[in-house]
Length: 265
Image 1 (tube, rainbow, N blue to C red):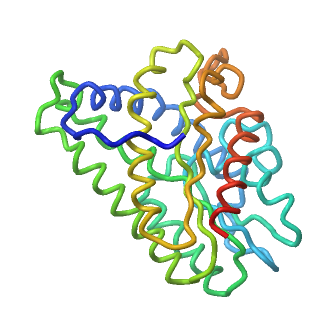
Image 2: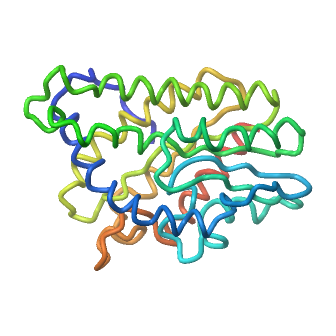
């Protein structure tokens, strides 16, 4: 589902909802960050031999929520049917777009420059607004001008443009796919379900804007798969709250990513 036109960033209803959603997931992201970083090859300094699928991004790309980040998360699922391709996943839970630039991009560029990367995926942007949480003005209703929400979204857009631009410059024909965020709360009855439904299309519009500036860049849209299915595809309703996809959810994301890769090719 293509996201609707982005509203003005001064719309206080969805802006305050955005702060609430980000705050609710930040603790979980920080809790799982160490475990996921250990479970993926993000901690490895060496790229695999042969053709490579390079994955950059946050907890979703790192495999949070999967029963085994090495096999049942969407990155290895996307890599599996690609003959002769090994996933090089440098994603880390909790990463912002700035973190991707500072800590992941150089590693991805080192392999894309080699000509061995068959395609790249990027899942980033969801954590960029976490920096607003300590700002007391960002929880006031109505949202005052002193809350730097406009700046945060603009920075995320600029950073995504830098990431995609540098990857594209390193390899003119390499397909690149950006992940548009699904609503993991949809169908769960969770208090954040409605606010996430209002907020995430706005973030996805930024992602769409960046992708549209480059050739051979596509956006994966798993939104429809998760619509009204968050209870079956995520851990939102688990005894221990976790706003990440389960194995079935990771399969749904893998399907959307695979379709987008074909589009980018």
